[in-house]
Image 1 (cartoon, rainbow, N blue to C red):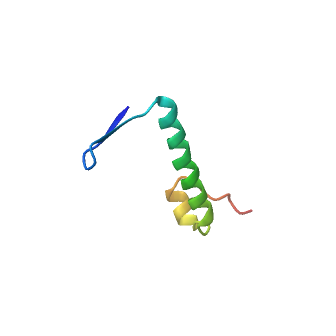
Image 2 (image 1 turned 60 degrees about the horizontal axis):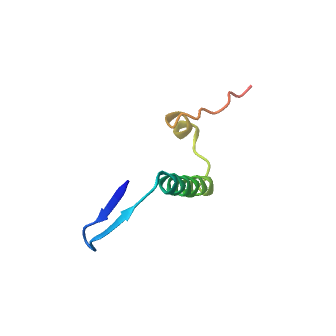
Image 3 (image 1 turned 135 degrees about the vertical axis):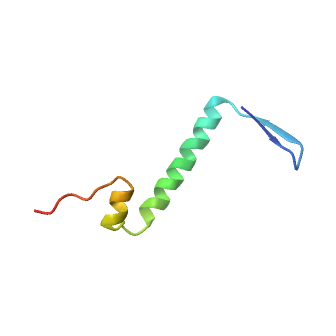
Length: 56
């Protein structure tokens, strides 16, 4: 993959490994951010596909 920054004229060549490592970094950052938020309400859990367990 080639990234061309037109504002600086810099061309960066990414290998598949570099792109995958960056993707994992962003995914880990998103997971940490999500974990730091308050627990979702039951309605939000349903909307996001994480239904709450039924109360018995």
